[in-house]
Length: 52
Image (cartoon, rainbow, N blue to C red; front, side, top):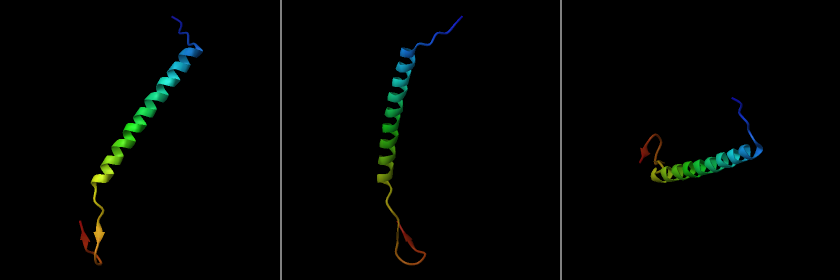
């Protein structure tokens, strides 16, 4: 059995992989932005004392 791979097939595969990578990047960037907003920064009042 021989496998033939045409240029249009490679081009379609490249487009689908690009779209998938773009969607995954947007979802990961959106997920990390929401988690960083929930954390409150710690404030140090005096030496060695940390207030949350």
